[in-house]
Image (tube, rainbow, N blue to C red; front, side, top):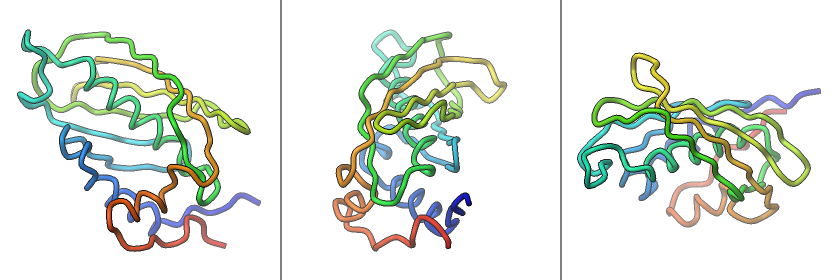
Length: 162
């Protein structure tokens, strides 16, 4: 029998991670997460640009890494963390302004390693960047509980409903 994800947990996680300092630095917002998917957005600002006036490759990398991570999270057991092992980013088109929409998708969850991908598009759906991320499953390390403690948040509702 498949476990049912607790929507209160999902919303609490989204609220928590969106207050993270790095997310705020990049004005990156996780809009939705669920089994096998995530949705992340940011609106381009001057801080996202390289010295030549286009998006810095590190912005694409951060968006893809984030969307891939959260596309895997909802299917893992409670108190399981992830650490990115490898991130591959393909820059498909330059961008200087506008909203970036990033859709993450779980490819496979293994016993110790997960694989996910993310596509960055503009509001019209034009592909701007694509990437894959391999993530190591960690038991008791970099868990959402540890994020709550590090950020001074309140304990979260259970991840799954009986």
